[in-house]
Image 1 (cartoon, rainbow, N blue to C red):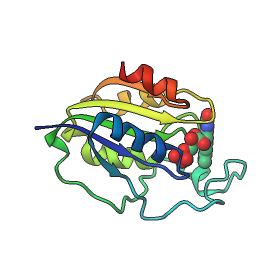
Image 2: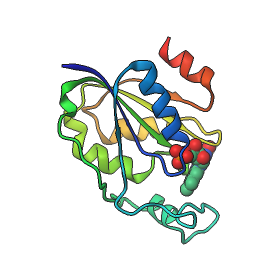
Image 3: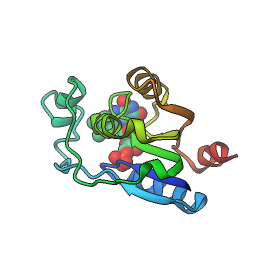
Amino acid sequence: MKDNIIVYFSAEGTTKKVATSLQERLNGDIFEIVPKHIYSKSDLNWMDKNSLTTVEFNSEVRPEIASSIDNLDQYQNVYIGFPIWWYIEPRIIDTFLDKYHDKLHNVYLFATSGGSTIEKATSRIKSMYKDINIVKTGTFNNVKAIDEFLK
Ligand SMILES: Cc1cc2nc3c(=O)[nH]c(=O)nc-3n(C[C@H](O)[C@H](O)[C@H](O)COP(=O)(O)O)c2cc1C
């Protein structure tokens, strides 16, 4: 059994930075959820009702993941990070959880955002994947938040 893996999705780089620093601090492995379709700047425009992310938010689509991992059940602790989109997790996180929810031991959720907390995403994930053992969650918009989380 291994200790820690950090799994993350990041469209614009912020969550990636946080995930990398978490990996260094926890001395774990890292896995990036890479979308088959890379989100463009216009896909990410939340002001546009027809942008891809707005359309995805309003549906239960499961965007395809291009990367894959087959040994997740070897990890005691799985840290899953994502940006908050429309107050909740991006649909591609649901794609990941659909596929891997029964392979996860202890789960730690973390998010970056423009200010929203991870709370709504946590309740949504808890209600959709009742078998996941969520140990702790955190919104990492500054280094202090990560320090607090790791205490
Ligand atoms: C489509 C979209 C929706 C977003 N919705 C929210 C939101 O509801 N609340 C919030 O605080 N930030 C929101 N943001 C801002 C992101 O959560 C924030 O910039 C995040 O750190 C981006 O992470 P990334 O660089 O890893 O993709 C949104 C960003 C995008 C692109």
